[in-house]
Length: 88
Image 1 (cartoon, rainbow, N blue to C red):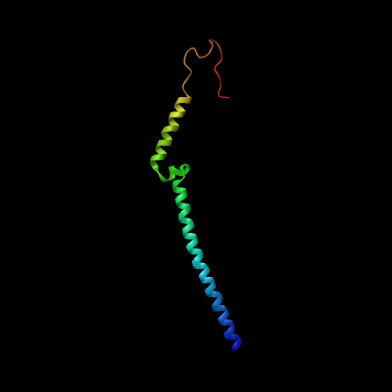
Image 2 (image 1 turned 180 degrees about the horizontal axis):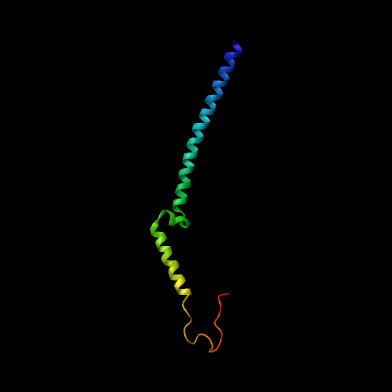
């Protein structure tokens, strides 16, 4: 009978320790998750995910850069009769 009481006491002790560790872990995980969310929200590389206006600005900038690259050279920038450069 005494052995059974001792076993129950040890099992209860272990359960209490595990519950305390679980509570501490949940608190730490919540804090770390919030810190990670904050870092991701403030990262400029991910701004288009969090701010739709940044996506529009990025698309406008990309469209402007594409238009600037596709402009033909003005007259007199290459020798007459010289072949046009390719994009290599």
